Image (cartoon, rainbow, N blue to C red; front, side, top):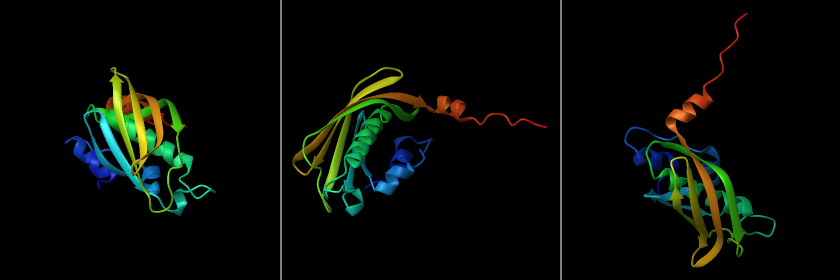
Length: 156
């Protein structure tokens, strides 16, 4: 499996994307990404569980959010990031317990020049755990650089 940094380095030959520390901490792995689709996976451990000893809803939603954003980012090498504007998740059954491998699959349904609409599914084996729909805004390299430039330092 590819790490986020490895995958993003392979998506474009000229740019590598920085790793996402939160996703690395959770242990989410990219399985594939390209052509408006993506897939990520996570093997559950105790740290991913809620008080009922099943996958925490926040873990499920994080995987779905990430896989949909990743699907959109796979459409164009100039896309720096995808910012979630809106997301709806329907939980259908418990996600699983320690040792289960969750697979999230995302795809772009429609994309304009600045916005993309996606759907995602999270699976535990043959069981559909949750479905999501999301709207994301493309952030291109040139935009992100301008927005993150530090303000000028006032001199005394």
